[in-house]
Image (cartoon, rainbow, N blue to C red; front, side):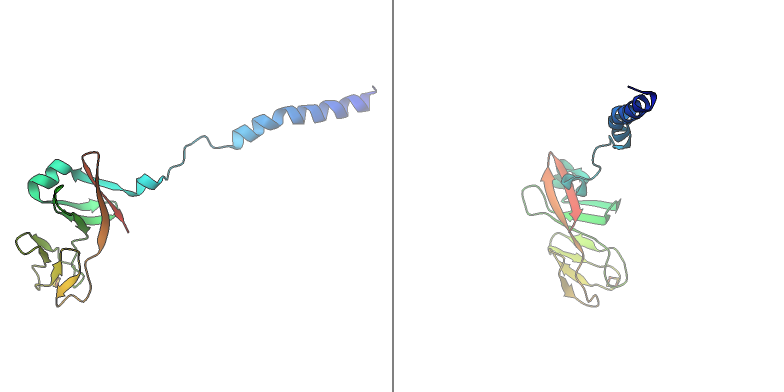
Length: 139
Ligand code: FES
């Protein structure tokens, strides 16, 4: 083996041996940050919901949330922001509807508009009970 052959062989060998290290250095070791369950936001416990019949989270990451119901009834989650001019609606458990205190727009339990002046329904969220928590997500 002459000098030229030795250098060529050594150069290729050193590149080949360092390739796995270079690939490993470029590969991220962080886990995936998004998973299907990460869309759900916990806004309280089942015992809080059962005690009050509603849960509010005005500053949740997905927006203002109002959950009504109990673990023994259907639950629904809405954005309590009135689509008319932005007042916060109140839950009327006796009538089973949301009522806006500003101009008396009314909304059904599922958020559908019942009375003017609002012209749109309340925005609704997905909601579930899991592990003694009440969870919501955008839909
Ligand atoms: S802001 Fe709700 S009815 Fe006007």
